[in-house]
Image (tube, rainbow, N blue to C red; front, side, top):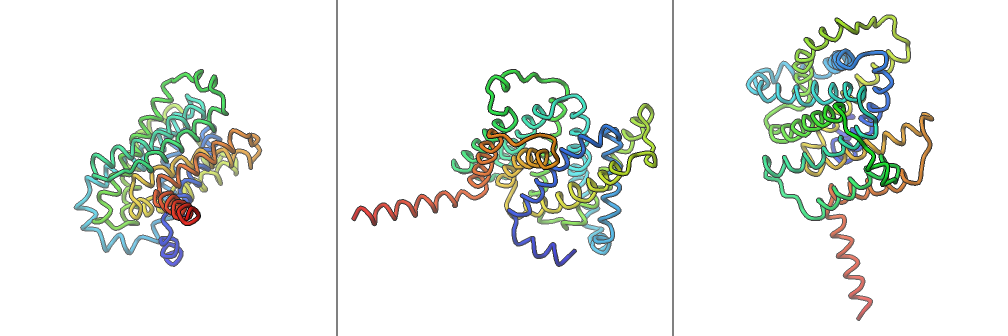
Length: 319
C-alpha cells in the first residue's frame, strides 16, 4: 500500500478525480442503502469499519506522532466534526427529505464556498480565469441536474432537506480549508485516522438515539446491503479522503474545490451504467462544461499557454 501511495502522490489532479469518483458512488449507493440502514447508524458503522481497515497501515506512524497529534487536538476535533462526522451524516439525513436534483444543486455550491474561505483565511489568490472555470463548471452542473430545462430549474422548491445539505456543504468547506492550513504540521495518515475516531465519538450519542426508534439488526440485512456498507467504508471513506487530503495539500483548496463538480458528473454516469437512467444530450453537454471548468479552475496556465501559442502562430503567419 505504501508503494502505491508514494507512486500516485506524484499526480495530485488524478488523486482529486479519483476522490470525486468514489464520492459519486457514495451518492448513488448510500441512497439505496439508507432504505435499510438509517443515516446516523450507517455513518457510524461506515467509519467504524473504515478505521478497522485503516489502522494496520497507520499504527506505527500513530505511535510515532502521538505527541504532535495530542498537541493539535482542537484542530483534529474541528476536522473530525466537519469532514468525518458532519458532512456525510448530514447528506445521509438530507436525502430522506429532498430530491437528488436539489441535493446536487446545493452541494455544487461547495467549490464557491471553499474559494471564498481560502481567499479570506488562507490569503490565496484566485485569478479571473480560475473564477471563470468555477462559473463554467457550475453552469455544467445546473445543465445536468435541470436536464436542460429552464422551467424545471424555476420549479425547484426548497425544503428542510435542502437546508441540511447546505449545512453539510459548509462543514465540508471548513474541513478542506483547515486541512490545507494545518497540513504542514500534521502527519497525513495518522491525522485522518484520529479524525475518524473523534468523529465516531461525536456520532455515538446520535447513533444511540436513532436506535431507540429505528433499530437495525445487522445480521438480518441482505448480503448486498452489507457488501454495500463495506464498500462505503473502504472506497468513499478511506480511498477518497486519503486522495482528497493529499490533493488539497499539493494543489490547495481553491483549485481542488472545483473538482467537486465532478461528483455530479460521475453520479450521472454511474446511474446510467447500473441502468437507473439513460444518458441524455443535456448530460453530455453539462459534462463537457464541467470538465472544461475543472481544467480552467485547476490549471489556468493551460489556457494561457494555448492563447500565447495561438498568438505566436498568428503573428508568424501574418508576416
